[in-house]
Amino acid sequence: MSKSLVKSTSVVVSMTMISRVFGFIRDMVTAALFGASAQFDAFSIAFRIPNLMRRLFAEGSFSQAFVPVLSEYQKNKSEAEAQQFINAMSGTLAAALLVVTILGVVGAPWIIRIFGFGFPTNGERFDLAVTMLRITFPYLMLVSLTAFSGAILNTYHKFWVAAFTPVFLNIAMIGSAMWLSPQLAQPIIGLAWGVFIAGVIQLLFQWPFLKSLKKLPRPTINFRDPGVRRVLKMMVPALFGVSVGQINLMVDSIFASLLVVGSISWLYYSDRLMEFPLGVFGVAISTIILPHLSRHHATQSEESFSLTLDWALRAVLLVGVPAGVVLGIMAGPMLSTLFQHGIFNGHSVLMAQKSLSAFAIGIVPFMLVKILAAGFYAKHDMRTPVRIAVIAMVTNIVLNIILIWPLAHAGIALATSLAAIVNTGCLFYFLRQRGYYHPREGWKGFGARIVIANIVLAIWLWFGTGEIAVWIQSSAIWRIEHLAFLLTTAMLIYFAALWLSGIRVHHLLMPQQQAA
Image (cartoon, rainbow, N blue to C red; front, side, top):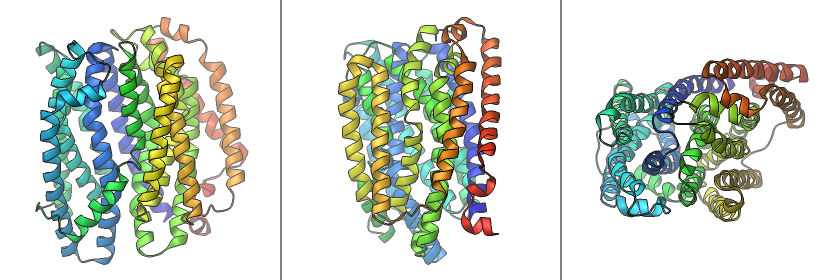
């Protein structure tokens, strides 16, 4: 079990890492061309709305409901029954998405009035946001069907395909920004077309792999199919569960629209850096363990279920804690190195640094929410994560109201991180209370070693980073060289500290694997 989890996780992490590298290139291009401007504020809103709904319906509630049901079909039903379920689910999902997409395109002005609450309705940002939302909204349908295809591939252990697919979004947006945007009267609209083009490419990319598995859907609309009904029943409460972080980020955008021009852009770029460790490791591990947890539940293997969760939690802490330390201490240098080009200036670096430092506090909780929520969904327990998600969302809104005025956009980021901590604590408490998870021995020693290694890492980075003013005023080459040096040495120091504190490879394996 442990070998397969480690191997699958390594594959997904590698593919996701490639995607994130292209994502950084994309953000460097957009920062240089559009900066933290009113136009980019408008694009951020227009892109975030379908992207939010994708994570809510496709990667959030749908995937968390669909994968456990498909895993049961794979384990307990015939291939013909599994294919019938896939066919019915694909057609039903496509029909629902088509209706939502039409409503989104038609209702774009009203949607922007809600999510861009602070945009004057007779201003440039509002008009641009409406135009671009009508272009980007079909991405919801395209990428949700892509996520559906990816969920099938993940269930059948073809993890790399779905993990690699987001690369095409970044490539399409880079190409559109560099070659399509200059041809348009409003260059920023080229980014919106890049999103639409990417949705088409991503969906088409996965079809050959589904065909090779003989799982290419033949869509039929059937709301009465037993499997479809189970998925739909599970989806409704799951909407708020694992996707609460994205809901909170959308709430953040609403509050940020009330602040000065550029606030949404500063949050966007700091969020993009935060998403790197979250997407590469947190989402990757949760994607890998959900099918395993679902099969353990289907076969009533409670000990294996708990051990899988335990392994995932240790893996997340091993990577998430240093990621939070690095982003918290090096927020300014990283933003300066990656994005301080073209019209993204030093002032934008300083503003984005404030929100990234606040987001860094929530890195570990954001990751843990993905893992802990998967434990509930694999058990078909949807109500508990929903109730907790509502508490976390209300917490985020209240903290936004409290912190936005003294801390501006940084207060918004801090509110999101604190809400994630509340979410994590509640999920962990109820996992233990319901008996879904029993920590195996060695946690105290493991935790102490993690703390020691991260203290050493923090000390090195604190003294090695220096003043942010030096980074802003230095050349791009100097920034790249120094950031590469600091990150490389930080990684070496961290793993050396782990080794010296006593952590070995066998500490990261399950008891069965250690015995082997």
